[in-house]
Amino acid sequence: MRMAALLFALVFLIAATGHAQAGFLIPAIVAAIGLTGVAASVATFIGTVALSVGISWAASKLMPKPDQAKAAGGVELDIRIDAELPQSLLVGRAVTAGSLIYAETYGKREEIDNSDMIEVISIADHPCEGLVKVFVAEKEATLTPAGSGIPGQWWGPLAQSRGDTVNGYNNKLAIKFYDGSQTTADPFAVAAVGNHPERPWTSAFIGRGTTYARVHSIYGATLVPGPMRWRFVVDGIRLYDPRKDTTVGGSGSHRFGTLSTHEFTANLAVIAYNILRGIRVLDVNGVAQHFYGLEGTAAANLPLDNWFAAMNECDATVDGEPQFHGGAEISVDTEPLEAIRQMLSAMDGRLTEIGGVYKLYVGVPGVPVFAIDDDVIRANEGDEFRPIMPLEQRVNHVTGSYTSPEDGWIPKVAPSRRVIEWEE
Image 1 (cartoon, rainbow, N blue to C red):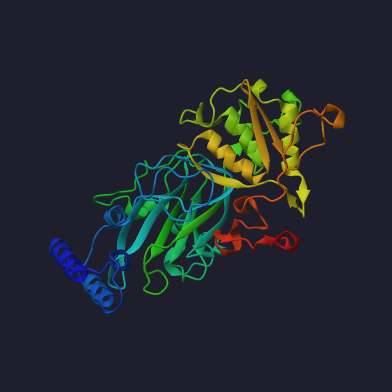
Image 2: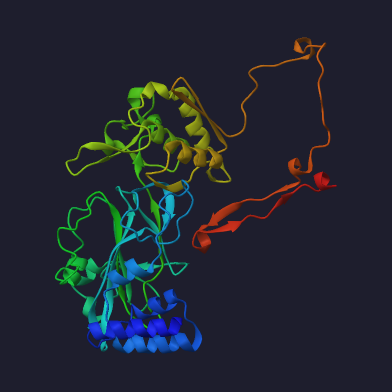
């Protein structure tokens, strides 16, 4: 039945289009329908010789919509395709697959129509510090800078605007990263599909204040048989660190009300502080607007002696690295407290709130502030001690999960930690 349905769909589409090859589109359709073996081979052959359909239609119809509400933080490894996705915030150093906001095929190479494809992938809805790494098809990519070592047709101004080429793909993949400070549209996309009859990417598509990547792919049956799977490791938004503000007892030029003085940080306590004070971004007129977190929290509600200590504890060096640094992609529909809870679990932190005053305690417990002895225990009241706990409360080994940057940031299960004496 599935084979018959596919053939019917292909015949319908063939009747509505001209005869052409569409290398980028066919494998995705076959895979999405779930055909394998001979059925897949036949379907691919029929589609390859006679189908030409815009990639934007395929993306919107074939890709499942993700759940809009997701847990704060974590790693999002699958690209999202949904016009109603909430805006996203990148804090610290984080990895994301981004969300596809535009995809279109064009051109003809070696008698193959739609041989080239432009993809625009949104990474964050605010300016970011910069791109750290790129992964393609689960492997870390090595990039050749724009315009260098590219043969023939890419020499000249076009080579520079195409972006960095991805090594190992015979010049069939290139990427250009925009950190959100751009003031003009991507010139390569404008030149390639600016005159597209249905879905042009024009010079008006600047993406002010948005961090995104523009990808150019050239179809190849072996190397680039379809849209590639991308992941981006990015240093996220610049934040305010009160320790670097001389006006509040720190040392430096940071000012909470002046976003241009802020700097990138992966310090989890600094990130939590900014969420509680409210993270802002500049609008198109250069005016700071609230973006995420609590809005209008007074500085006095976060006592700096307490927060300085927590931030310094996060920066403490352990095995040559900062003790509690990290990053996350946060959907703006995530409750700020939930986002902070995730950070607390990563820095062994406890957040207290009394009368609107927030205090953060990080790391191992501090020195005792109160002591008791037998003289303060009531002798005429009973006590109860159960040396043997119920089975569900006994713990003799622990495990966890972590992300592995060396393997494309894929979550893995950590080896269990055991105490043989407890087991015995």
